[in-house]
Length: 330
Length: 263
Ligand SMILES: Nc1ncnc2c1ncn2[C@@H]1O[C@H](COP(=O)(O)OP(=O)(O)OP(=O)(O)O)[C@@H](O)[C@H]1O
Ligand SMILES: [Mg+2]
Image 1 (tube, rainbow over the protein chains, first blue to last red):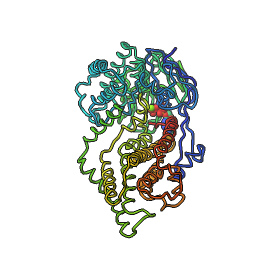
Image 2 (cartoon, rainbow over the protein chains, first blue to last red):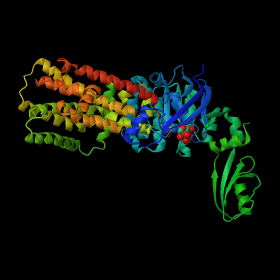
Image 3 (cartoon, chains in turn red, blue):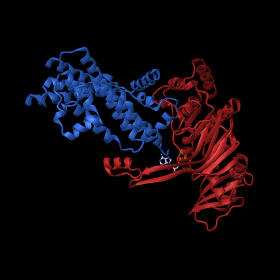
């Protein structure tokens, strides 16, 4: 029996057009389909299963339905259709029971008490999750060590840097030894060093303690470093479920150079790079690590054209999805 | 209960980090509500009685409603916050924890400055004590305590329903204000001075009339203008419990409607 089992999952949101004052609001409460209520399908048809101990990436462009799926997996949202079972429980119906077995980190939103020192938040969570004192001490010591929380345990959360706060949130979500950890963009906004520290921690958590992890991210590096399997979704539907290797190899190695030319060129072309897009004097060139290095490409460019500015972009998941649409799956 | 104290305590500690002066806030809350009491006293300089009730009797009713409302505000602050949490998606966090959402919401905020209103209600009761002669019996004392508790529960339930409505629509504050601030206003005066329509609402829909006016009339030995059965004053706790049950039902339904936010 897989730990997470999702079948034909669906979620539609009601979006109310505003107006009509307090009585209009009341009318909308009473008659559901009253004028001005639209439905938005965030998740249309998604099925997958995750086994114990897996670490799976759940990716897709903005608005694909990732967060919505995670909210249904935790019981925050009630699905509009399909079924979802986590560790034998139906999340929205047995939410409180399930809550004790899962950990959740929303990268955009902390679960810590903003005004209290980090250690106080952790202490409160110990009571909320009824973690025995001895177990809590042990766990806290271990997490403090692994996530290097020591220097800021006594600082109010609102004073912490984003990276510190994220580490605090990770610790908070793990105090009660959850079987599964959902991470919604745990590396968002972090610098390379902070990202790497979190990745190392997650790898260790998964390998040594066998915690199942489902994570969403827009960072290809997160995925290739952490996961063997990935689910790609777009517009609420599953596009791909399979190994990370095949995708990363085929699309992930592709980087992008954004070039601002000093003057308009009729048909710009550089060997080894593909002209992906062009707007006036700005060009988007994609190229593969194996075919041409960035310095060689830049040298070739400067030799041909007068260049005002350059930016190098690492591959992101949006690019991968775009190419899956263009070229199909491997 | 222990968890409630822990969480509410944490909130209080968090607040003290910003707080300029607690005493100042209590004082300001006291004065702003004291104006209401003053208005009542001034009214009675012109009229000697209101619906057959003397100034002391009305002060008693007013004090009872005021103390109850202050208690509801003191413990129900989190419910006011809940509207915002639901609107802004912060409620997500509440739903990922293995504790009843209502408990978390109640413990999420507590505003000690509300004791300003409490003090003012107690002052009104003290004045009433001087200006009326109530012959207290154990039964009346129990009814008095019961009425305060029941009224506080009714107000809390109004807050609860107000918050729950946010699960369906984000515009619920109007509803709440009508019934809480309007409700204190009505509960503070003898019910017979209002229109039939308002009387009906506050007896049978939001049953503040049954939890304030009837017990107060019984304690003060005033006649019942509506001719309800003689045991009506003692129904207050039952009525409050039923109303709370309704509130909890709506809240439970609301939880399933929760939509969170897109980001
Ligand atoms: N509470 C809501 N009410 C209305 N629409 C919503 C709500 N939550 C999400 N949506 C819509 O559903 C779609 C999917 O949103 P979701 O947050 O799941 O996307 P996502 O994959 O997490 O995107 P991102 O990468 O930007 O976080 C979007 O079109 C979004 O606007
Ligand atoms: Mg998201």
